[in-house]
Image 1 (tube, rainbow, N blue to C red):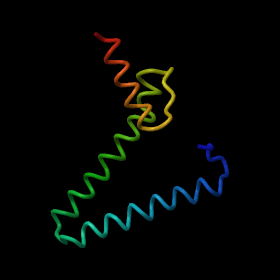
Image 2: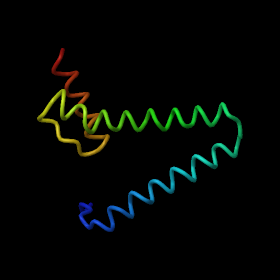
Image 3: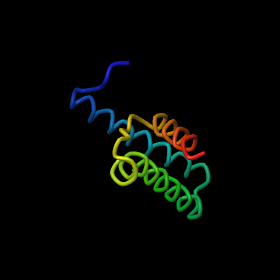
Length: 87
């Protein structure tokens, strides 16, 4: 797979993710429109965003400066390797 380097394509990809997330969230809420579902959906989205930030920024800046984020799979491999080293 080719690395995405065109700034316009990167922005379009980000906007597509935003659009898909918003449409998906609205469709989930419309399935069962209640305050409870809206709050739980917002909490789930916020939590996943914080986890992504943790995997991307916190580990690299505060835990292991040698780690370079390349996606969530690379983060999972990093965690598995670090657990093997601890034993």
